[in-house]
Length: 195
Image (tube, rainbow, N blue to C red; front, side):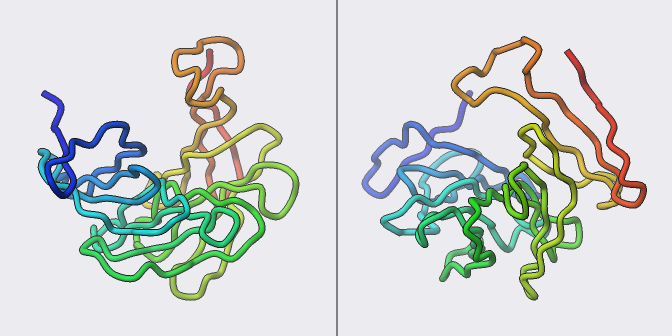
């Protein structure tokens, strides 16, 4: 059975987006009506972690489950913010004219992976350190890339390449999203899936 979530006075939540499980699997964070919420993964009452007139979304738990990174366009474009998973004041991590979407954290919890067209006109995958705000480019591509997550203790990154937007979820043609692996030391890219 799919868990049901409610807000405040038993208002059932419909249309939640971008669900993400905490590392221990006990909590789920998601975006609903432009804010980030958190609830038990088994269902129940959802509590807002953000409350802003602009869109907050794409939540991602830190490896220790204490923080949630999310994107927000409260400053005009989508920047990355973090907020304690127990609630609190969000802290802005990136300040760039590019729209940035967080996808995961590094295994040590010190940096956040994100995708953006930041340093050139082609899509890239980057990390940003949550303390120093230093941004590091991992890989760029002429095709759309995103969804980065660490492999091999952070020595490699797996990501999606190409693909149609969510409005065509079952598309299976030549432009379907594929998984790729990037080795950070050797700078070698390898296709994991094809077709």
